[in-house]
Amino acid sequence: MIRGQAIQEKFFIDDFYIHDLLRDAKKATNEDIEKILQKAERFEGLSHQDVAALLVVQEKKYIDRIFEIARKIKSHVYGERVVVFAPLYVSDYCVNQCEYCGFNCDSSFRRRKLSMAEVMQEVKVLEKMGHKRIALEAGEDQENCPIDYILECIKTIYSMKFENGEIRRVNVNIAATTVDEYKMLKAAQIGTYILFQETYHQETYERVHPKGPKSDYMYHSTAFDRAMEAGVDDVGAGVLFGLYDYKYDVLGLMLHNEHLEKKFGAGFHTISVPRICDADDMLNTRYEYAVNDEDFLKLVAIIRLAVPYTGIIVSTRETKEMRKNLINIGISQMSAGSSTRVGGYSEAQADIEQFSLADNRDVKEVVYWIMEEGFVPSFCTACYRQGRSGDRFMRLAKSGNIKNVCLPNGLLTLKEYAVDYGDKRFKKLARKTTKKHMKQIKNKETKKKVTENLKQIEKKGKRDLYL
Ligand code: SF4
Ligand code: SF4
Image 1 (spheres, helix red, strand yellow):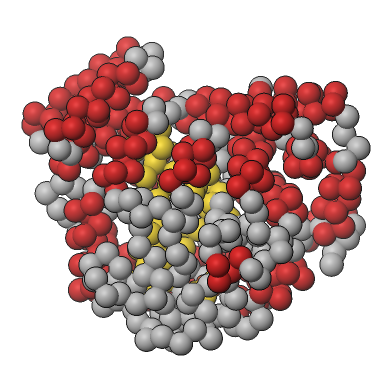
Image 2: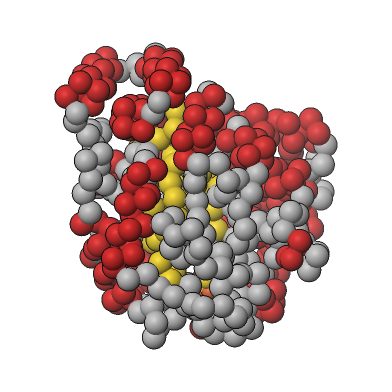
């Protein structure tokens, strides 16, 4: 483990420092907690000490305040939109032995990768579901799934056009790689490069990743440095909560984010919050740090307070009930109608899944439900195509202006979805949602433009209109 300022400059995770933070956090007084919450309410983000203090807080009155502030921050920064996307698994070949994953190299099943014809088949189904934004997922295997294959998949996906639109943004979640390969991904116009750290606790990391290239903790942890050096300016982090103490991993995320901010001028674009679920029998019995629902909600809300301008993503690993709680405390993106199998959208008998799902509703049900919860479901992909990425995106978010495009764009994509995929009942709620949220657009010019664009979509069949 690494200690000391001089070494910390070389590597951003300092195990002793994190343990010291958690030990000292127990000394925080009620007055300290009050001050931290007031600071969070001013959208200033939190220091490591502040985050640690909130992570050890137990009193209900403070936890309720954390939830309340988290919701306020989400609404202040992004408005009431919730972005919807789907994962697309293209290959389950993997040479790693991550012990929590169904694709690990010890699992015995017929592995495969999609042919380009099969990729097209999957994209057709995703488009029929209404998706415009996907996260491309693949295991690590240089031989069976090299970078050229991933690039071909991206090219294939972007080349497909349909009557109702197309997949407009491909985020990519593939193994840590070299600067040269990240440059290739950048040139292929990916959206966000996603990589989960799984856990920042090195000893645990090495125990749960015993074999394969991913077992190299340092190489994995410094992947975003190489990606950003290669010009990929949106990176999406995540840990698998439950592998180690969640408090440690939340602080690990904070240190990592800060390191990137200092070095590249922008931290994480998004943070994903998967966890080893209580419902997952196979895994839960083996993980002493599995996070219960109460702690999970608290940790997500604390992340929202700590990094107000970073998107937070929840997957269909969580139940409908949990996702309902999560959108009310600051989640800004969620997957819907997901399959975690290769070929899972177009084939009834697809192979093994990477992890099991707890929310099996289809996209239309999820989108309808988001509206019922008072939010605007959004298929927006505007920022990446408008060049609003990296530090440019962060400047816009920090100035409180991103919501001025998020909400209008959300409403425009909702209109597209309603016209193309909605039945009578859906359209009715979409109209009501739009009417309600249009009132929040204060800028007269923007309002006029959105009103005009809504008409263009409905009456003239226009698509892909955005600010
Ligand atoms: Fe492979 Fe990723 Fe699964 Fe690990 S988590 S076994 S790298 S697919
Ligand atoms: Fe995301 Fe930008 Fe669209 Fe907002 S405007 S939903 S930040 S792509």
